[in-house]
Image (cartoon, rainbow, N blue to C red; front, side, top):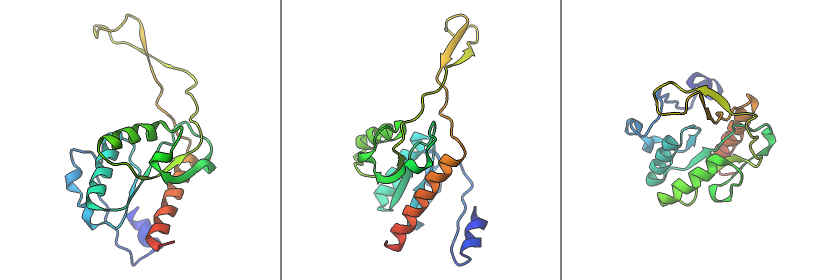
Amino acid sequence: MARRGLDINPGCQVKAVPMFYLPQNAHQVDLSQYDYVADCIDTVAAKLELIARCTALGIPIISAMGSGNKLDPTAFEVTDISKTQGCPLARVMRKELRRRGILHLKVVYSREEPLSPAQLIEAEAPAGEGTRPGSSARRATPGSISFVPAAAGLVLAGAVIRDLGGF
């Protein structure tokens, strides 16, 4: 990714940080050096940590919401998280951000209602774990079709460029 950024603009400064960002290692990243943060993290705890840290430092941040179980790449839009509807991740984030006193956040989300998983996954329950004999049902993880997260990323990148360029 760093090489691609330099191919596009050899004069830009790219600092690649090879890590899986988590609340436990968030202190390893000095956010104060950034002009803008694009949050494309999938885990709620890490998203919340990054957003809270950027907000405390006054660093502009835009956050990608869920693209799982979506098929329409044209349904993405940039808005405040308080105006999102139908996105399960945005609903969880709104609630958790309010608990932290953060009421506004620029997000990219899809107006498309997520598709329901076609079926439950039946998983064999290991014996002796206090579960019913036989099997137990768990929900399927929301799947992403290849072009949908890419479309969300393009919308997010466009918003960052417009903000940084003052458009």
